[in-house]
Length: 519
Image (tube, rainbow, N blue to C red; front, top):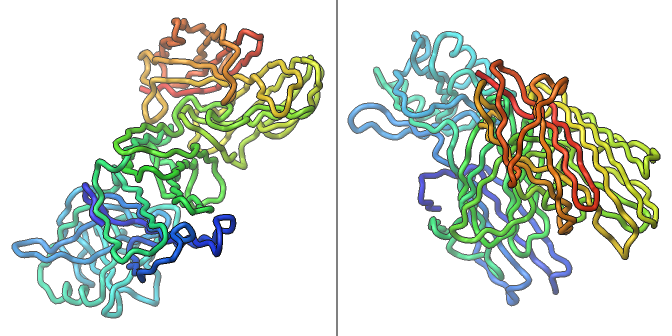
């Protein structure tokens, strides 16, 4: 594997798809492997290339760590960070450290420690940190190499690495050794690649990546709490692949990432709020996309304003079939584009209340709700209330959305004119603005995907600096752009939007603490 920018493999996926006689029944098998795994293939071919496919996928990033003995002619060392959920604290840039052997003072040095089956690697790392070491290198108690894991929710206190027993003994025998570590703590880029071959497993698995054949996706991961845990995953399908699963990689908010992505294949993106090792957390998925060579895309994840809305790329997000209607609203959806599916955080509080011509039909503990409809034209009202009380989640703490729309029974499945509000807000990666500054805001009101009208006739915006106790109207121009004057004191700005179309369908949405204001 050769890439235009320096890279190393984080994960590798190897798979095949086969069918005995036709594509009606396809057998798929795929294995995900760590970047340290060597993979070998046996070349083979089938008589019918439409009935078999092999594929190899790579997820690569900037090299995380390199180590070399300092001084003239210093040789490279094969060291590895502790792995796991959070793994090791990391070097960012270059750092040269003197090696402290067992029994020596480790303060401000690299502690060289022998693996001890009588204790845990956690205890060995903590002991080195307590003694003032700046990093620790644990060598194996046998000559071969080894890998260690840190499966706690916090990374090690100091950079923690492993090395083979043979290398450790050589370091012990050397007087005054110094090691230069060069690393990238958080990779600013990744390569997300998939190669497939119809009809065979190729003999040559080498791949030289050329920049012009890839698409570029620039992603920004927003969050009010710096360092908050999140996850991100990109999924790609080869033509015969029937099943694929997301595998979230750890992301800490607030950060940026540039991906270089294989083109011409279906790809999805998903972002999760919360630790990747936890089963909980909310996450959202984009619709399937096929990129073209040279295409450039920008994604903003978890960007204010997070609100209740219909996913923009979800088919039939609000529709009726005969006497049953359904509104598939996402309780808390960011302002990014291409949204398709949202998985709710199990701790979120959601409530939907449904009326027909002013008469209560019922309530449900979710924003995704179905309800009975009558054949004749009637006005329906769906009111949703969403609340998230979670550590680190400081904006969009409450969202109330009041939809009113009209519908009469048509032929087959028909779309309902439920309006969603899209926000364009000039905030930073922390979903914040400075005190005494001015924040640009832009609005759009849209119907569900596939419904072209009626035309939007009126949109209004208000801002509040006291969680909705009082409101100030914000002037919008003809393109629904405006400016909010932020207060002199740190705090939050809440937003209220109303929009109406030519048939009287409307939405009235209040987002409490839509973004934060900080000094």
